[in-house]
Image (cartoon, rainbow, N blue to C red):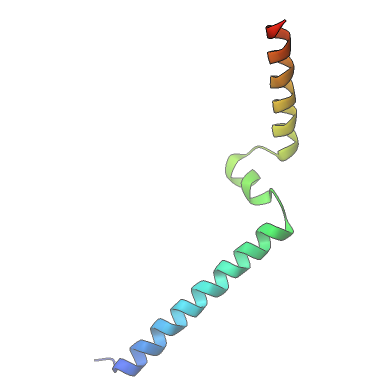
Length: 64
């Protein structure tokens, strides 16, 4: 049976490790904007912007 003190230190370690990993992920997101989103969606920011510009152009032409 694991002593209670050892369990407490283990839980504290897991909590600190989770905070550390979260801060690493947050730092990576700040340093490389859009890269994580691009990986998930497979669409770059430039192509998203071009797509929205095209959509606006089509809306203007359809509205005339």
